[in-house]
Length: 549
Image (cartoon, rainbow, N blue to C red; front, side, top):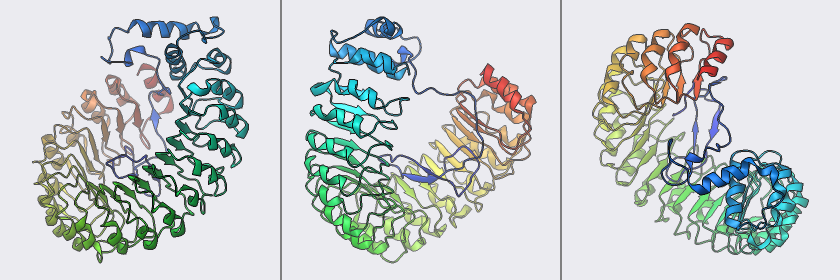
């Protein structure tokens, strides 16, 4: 499933949606991770900026000047006389290097800055907002997510009427009264208020004035039921995120029917049924539709099949059975399809064989078997497939072995053995292979040698010893390696993988690895996450390793 640690199926990881990936998954997480290095919010290393990135690049004169000004910030009282673009660069560097304070912020008063990005920055509160608002008509973008700003602080922005983007995610002290300031932001094109109790049905009345809004994010706003009526005039809206707005129902969705420019609609974990989906039939430009964990059935597919532009459809954890799945055949432009945790069998796959543009197919935790995989033989663009916790056996591996475009295969499945892995050796382009629960032995690891491009590998079935790791030690592209649950691994394993210098994440939990073996990890200079649960290591030795890393 792509995690680096041992599976806890009760733990759900909520990932941000990627444009062409399934948005949610179970992660193999553990109770403890040893972090070798704590990564800062950002680095002030000027070599990372601009063209020609990389260590050793000579910084530009501008970068050197900005770095010097930031270092000597206490010597200046104001930058108001500087060109705004220069002030902007200094401000951005102060934020990136985590050096901006309430005192140094005063230096940027009346500097005509365009962008104030303080999302997740520590200490941001109402007192900061007065300086932020002093940019007035020049201010185009503000991010104060995770701050202590209240209604009073937000109201300072009332004179910044040229604002185009505003992010107030997780701002717990902003109420529906604070939303009133939005009524003056008619130029706003992007608005984000994730997990805000301040966004209520009543407070959303100000949204009616935001006629230029293109992107709206209301994820986890639990009080917006009944408020979508105020959005029916937002005809320029292209992206709407209402994931985990648990009280949204069919009656709310009908107000979206006239938003014909919508391209992306996120509705996971809403109380929407097949009736609610019927209101979406006129959204001909819709390319992304996320209905994960909504109580819909295959009956909704009739309405969805009319969305001719649809490229991504997430029906994970819905109530889909085989009956009604014939409507999939009309979704000819579909590239990503998630049918995980549904009640489908091989009969469903018959209706997918014509979706030749599919690049990603999620079938985990379904009753799909080996025989049904034959219907996927023409999906030559398929890049990723997830068959974890299905009824697929080694026989099924022969049926996907001809899909040469595959880069990512998830076979977290106890029905897969060495025989099945052997059938896949022709897929030399694989970069991600998940065999977490597969019954792969030391003999089976010999087939891993064919996958020279692997960047991520998980083999955690319990049957691998140091001898099997010898077949992994030459996979130099690996950045993630999970060998947890293999109780016979010893310090020899760490010695063998010490040459995998690209490794960023390593998990050897529940093994015989001891303090003695930790010395072999010193060569892994890129390692950022090391998981050693239930191993024979001590906290003191881990601290020593962290110091030398």
